[in-house]
Amino acid sequence: MAPAAQLCSGALAERHLPRALVRLRPIAAKAQNNDHQDAVRAAVRRIADKPNVRIALLSQAIDWSQEAETRIAGRVFPQALLSPDGADEVVSALLTRAASDDAALFALQFSWLRLLDDLDDAAIGQVTAAWCRVVEQDVFDRSTVQEVFGPVVHNVFGTPTCRTFTNWMSPSIRSDTLDWLTR
Image (tube, rainbow, N blue to C red):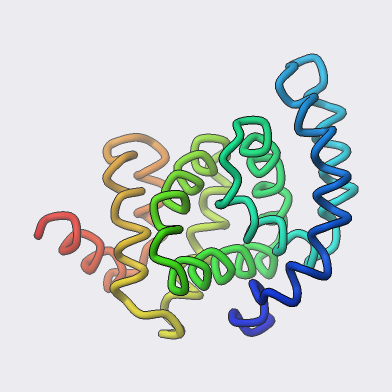
């Protein structure tokens, strides 16, 4: 896996985002119409098939405020989770962004909730396993992990999504998260 710090670098985003965003914006407009869902998915797959473009889009996605663009971000997330390496990249990119920008935390939590709502159990397991692998490398400050992760668990607590998510956690991560939620 590439170093987390490189995944969301400004240079990477500047290099890969402009062309991708130009191509995505008209697709985002179509995303408002359910008749275009298959076409939207296919287009996003074509645009986001390169890891650098995908990670740049994910980094940008939590800054997007318009509903159509948020829906496009929701299409990109599952594509990035098709392999363990891709899932690790996503988790590292999101945590790197949260660690460097406190203002991004709320948007990041919202993005995680939308992501989990749209995934099946297998994909939830994939991203949760990636979360645990990345977190347990101790690259990220534990308080950042708790600040991002806690509200997600809190908001889906008791749901099938939450049960799948927490079942994949290591005991140490589960304990820290519960401590964060109850303090």
